[in-house]
Image 1 (tube, one colour):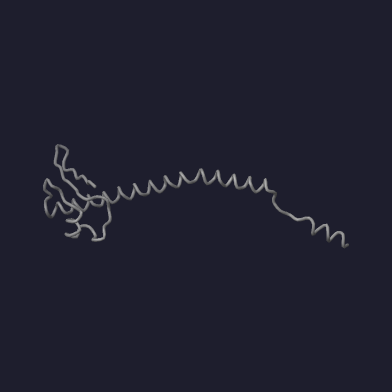
Image 2: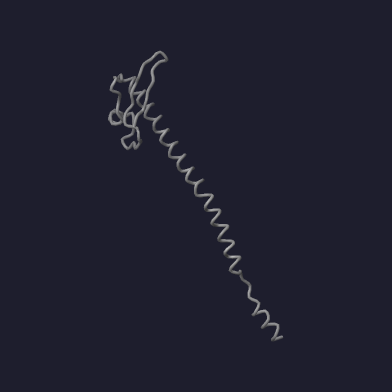
Length: 112
């Protein structure tokens, strides 16, 4: 009986060094593959946000143009905020919107 207990105690389960290194190598490969993918997702989100903010400023400039016609110098984001067409805490990258009239109609262009 005592011998069986000793045998059970001596049988320690665990992982060998090679098994642990194999798991670490597999995890390293997974991380190396996933980091660029995550970076692309973040960049796409940033680009999408900037485009949405640009469209928001252009829409605000269109509304401003109905009330006060925009001249050749354009309208700035500061002017749009002062008139209430944009919220005062707007933090976009667009600084100015210009209006051009051509054969195809009126075109609004936002510039940083």
